[in-house]
Image 1 (cartoon, rainbow, N blue to C red):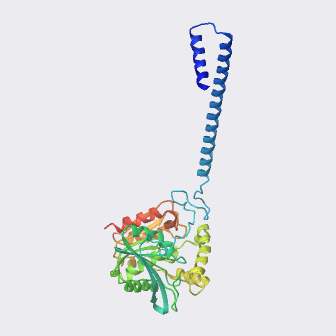
Image 2: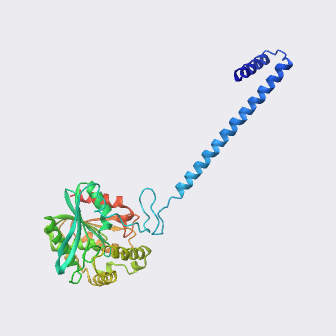
Image 3: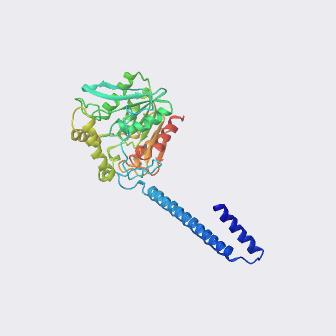
Length: 351
């Protein structure tokens, strides 16, 4: 039937082009075909318009969804943009523990007896150049886990530990001091049969790593010191009022209750405050005792540690380097983990 209509339309067009007079019956059929063609054209335009509208709506929805992705902002609770980089105002989530995810590699965990009947928790994985990662005060070794996984991919042997009284480690009976924390590291190294290792320290962990380098220079091959300080004045008085620090304190308390085997978070907080009031007390004469290659690293928006002291460390220690991590705060290793890990890997691969 459709074939006959098409032929009729063709004949009508052919007859018209030849200027033959159309018969009344053929003229009516031609007009019907024309109306049918117009309806088909209208239907095609309607479908095309509908498809375009659907496509536009889908595009608008996709754009809306893209724009509604949580961008890094001043809210510490916001998720990152899709590239994984947080704004320097944000407090990103605590990484998954190394013992729970190590890229399929075996992770050895345990406790090492420390002085004063303390029990020091550690996790170790990988083969290659040993690197010991030391966390900041009131945190725990989970904060170093993303960096640990990056170094595992770079074929390093990584060791994370909870500082005395932090995380899974117990405080013991001795007063907390940076010397005692440094000795705990050396005790762990002896247990793991590590003659020397590179160190990456964050905040109090950076002070701890530098103290190991001063007290036990033969055990340290390199020091990546992020947010270190030389005196109690290196901690900014305004730091406690920063939104990220307040959020971190709340989180640290929750994590301590979940991980700690004994003690109380308020006691640990008081012990750390007493330590920060007294130590470290390093002059340039003390700093030159660090003979291992060292980078003193600062965040350009650190809300807790004065950059002046980081620069002092870099200038006082021979052949030390100074690095400033852009668009980050005291939590740079969480805010931009790729930038942080690449900086560490660059340092470890240098001379």
